[in-house]
Length: 217
Image (cartoon, rainbow, N blue to C red; front, side, top):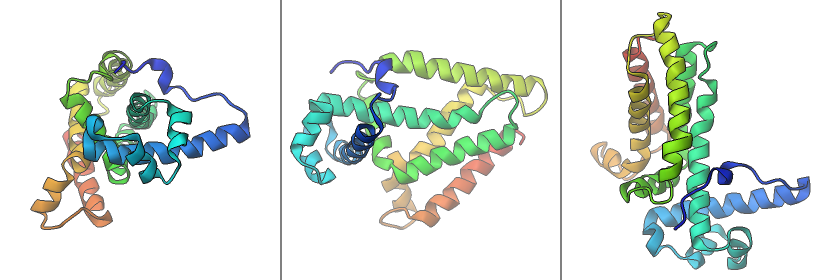
């Protein structure tokens, strides 16, 4: 499979009507693909299974995405983009507590709402990130370093405790994504078959409080 390019993270340009149709179709197909890829892996997933899961004709998959590899790359691109958007609030002038809390809550919400996307992403990393590696070393790295510089500015100004700003992101990712990637383990320990909204609310308050206290906020 070809590595993911930066251009694939940019929205398509189309007239309003066509753009709306494309967005709706892409949304249904990507959400279905997340579930199928998460359950069967890339090798086990089929376009027929994704079409069935989406409730759309198989021809729609090929029309909007071409081959299975293209749809897989689209799933990864959307997941990474959705994870990066909440970092936009981390700016020098922002309140550290509010900005970090919004970011953590957004990541927890994504784990609750789209756990399959997180599983697909995790599986890609476990296999050496053949599609994502280039973006991890460029776009993701640049974003983390830029936001870590903001955190370091807060630290230098005495606005938060002295933590390693880069590793803070790793900690946030691990703490939030575990509720999607290892939800079966969490549910089993809690004595449940699956996590519900109350479980995620409880987990969110725990993760937010733990990380903010560690940051002196």
